[in-house]
Image 1 (cartoon, helix red, strand yellow):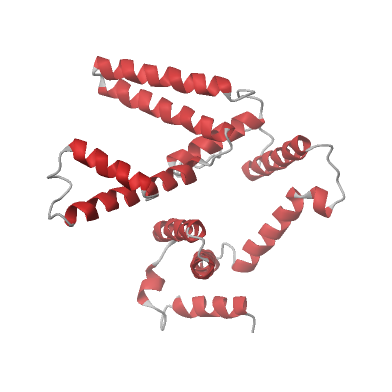
Image 2 (image 1 turned 30 degrees about the horizontal axis):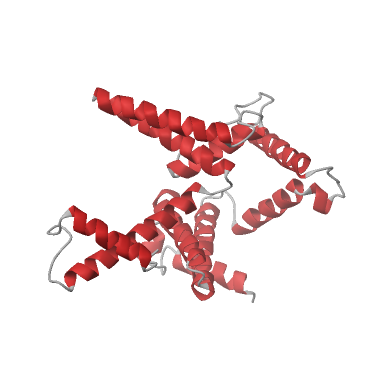
Length: 264
């Protein structure tokens, strides 16, 4: 028996209505979503930590999610794991005609345009009609906001709505920052929130032009801040003090010390 066949059999046993696990039997498509997102982020964490052993374990946990959804769908007569794999194989072959069908592209831009055209045809086929759908219609609203912003901007850019170079994006960031300052001075909280959103959105656009993934960049900055803050806590604990008891000027000095010591 192959490992995949064994995994599918184990999942069927776990979901058995008589002898299966009560927790596994209770799960639905909806209840699995938080677990799926958690497992995906744990894969990303293992990659960032460059821990191949943990990555192998986390990929297994993520695969379990696919098998779990597929088993629930099979019980409802919707599809099964084999259909999931078959659909994926068909999609990979269809989206790579330069690999599987001998198609040649004159440039990388031409290949990207073909890729987007194929995906647009797939989206239209899913709608089941001949109506041209909106370019941004199927960007998932459940994506984390940074990822959603990057997806929206990349999709628009592939259709020609984009700055041709990075310098105007820097100018746009400065413009949005000034508008946020004006909103803050007005004291209008709704306006402030709107301008904060605009600033974050254009910051993602700058990331994209600089070929930096915003989610990863922010995650790394979060980790750097946590490491330096932890250093301050430990230094103060050695003196019997806490962060809250320490003047800001002294905290700034400890922060600079953490930076010099490479706590990033």
